[in-house]
Amino acid sequence: MSKIIYRLFVFFYNAALHLASFWNSKARLWVQGRKQLLEKIKLSFEGNSSPVIWMHAASLGEFEQGRPVITQLKSIYPDYKIVITFFSPSGYENKKNYTGADYIFYLPADSEINARKFISIIKPSLVIWVKYEFWFHYLSELKKRDIPVVLISALFRPGQPFFKFYGSLWRNMLLCFKAIFVQNQQSAELLKIIGIEKNVTVSGDTRFDSVINTAENFEALPGLIKLFCGSQKVVVAGSTWAEDEEELLHFVKNNKAIKFIIAPHETAKSNIEEVQTRFTGCLLYSQLTESNVQTGNVLVIDNIGMLSRLYKYAHITYVGGGFGDDGLHNILEAAVYGMPVIFGPNYEKFPEATDLIAYGGAISVENTLELEKVLNNLITSDELREGYAAKAKLFIYNNKGATEKIISFITR
Image 1 (cartoon, rainbow, N blue to C red):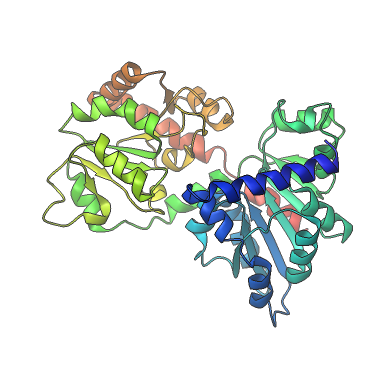
Image 2 (spheres, rainbow, N blue to C red):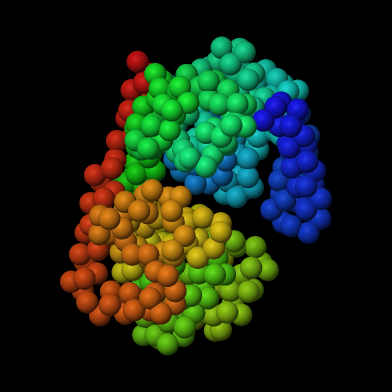
């Protein structure tokens, strides 16, 4: 891909988002969040004389991968200011008030001018990019200024542009990184094929460290959640899409003695209304009171930020995304509490899902009938459920340590 084609791609991508903003709430947030963005960033940085560490994450999932690294760096270098940027609204809107960073912004759209201005304003001493999302102008400008950039929790697959005949520009972007920390050996082998080897380390996935930290420093949710669960078996379905909810629907309707907590991935009012229509008579978390908390067996979480702690209250967990094209969501958040994890059939791009199944801590189901059979078996057999649960937790703890490898490199 030439620079001209890349610039055209970015231009038309941005134009498409501006057009979509008239009817799509996410696109609207993306556009509105970038209005006069550089001016706002410049104003925020007036008077700052402290050195800066900048972390960029595409969205919420990537933020969680970067969080343990940033947390440790802030502890080691308390005089440094931490800047976090997001590409997507789901990341920024969820974490714009995160107290572990000094500045949180959207990333200005990738262009030579924006990259030059942004980097000139924040003047980073170290840059950390998480997993994927490679912006040519930003990486080129950082390399030009000899600012060290580290890529963490990276995951590479044969189908990506880096490994195609047209991927020269993408391969050049990889040369901008001082160090690349990959999740698995397959990623390292792919990079070796294209001549990138010396600065590559197989560190594992920092999300393991992130979820362990959340679980070991657990903050209980408001008492109404525990009151809703009572003494009954609880299934928590997290980050669900319509496809997931349709698969769950029949089982939910026919098992009134089981409590279900459903946390949709999209919490916009229109989507919550669709979920309410699907699960007739469900309770909304925003409307939960002591007087109605025990009047139903389905609770829908209509806010953001609770899911990583909600799984703690489950006997069985279901993680969404595996029945659609949007990608499987974070199964590690559920597994860390020692819970059986169930998800749909589309998980081939997520090595942690394949590994957790092989470990005996997760089950993938192809359809509604399989899902109902698995749920019934896990609910009726404590021995079976506890076996999956123990293996899920062991899997998490046996894969920790990526953060320490990255920190060791940065601080050496």
